Image 1 (cartoon, helix red, strand yellow):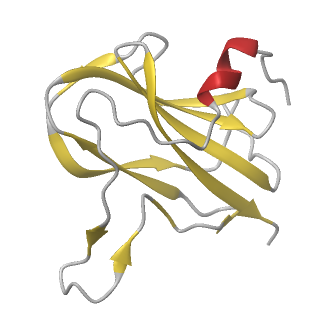
Image 2 (cartoon, one colour):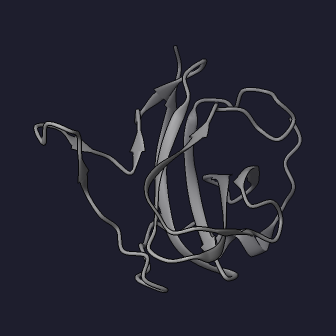
Length: 133
């Protein structure tokens, strides 16, 4: 597996949630309000499973979502390409990551960070854990 070494990605791989541009972390609930929905689920996840990141965008804005490993190496873009794309306001949209890198290979067990970037600024990050079978 080949990963690009992006030192500029390191600041994005923080576990601090920023409250910028109206992106506010929320806890949402299932239809019967009995179980809490997480920002990423299932978490932890196994090879062959997908993990879903919940996306809430309060207004139309340019965004992208990338996955990094714990070392800050870029694993895969999930939404928006290299520069981001205009995205409509949405609440609780599921963005799927199949646990594969940009080359289509499954990533090894470890900690991964999904990073939401809006207008070029990292506004939210979510940690997910991949476990062995």
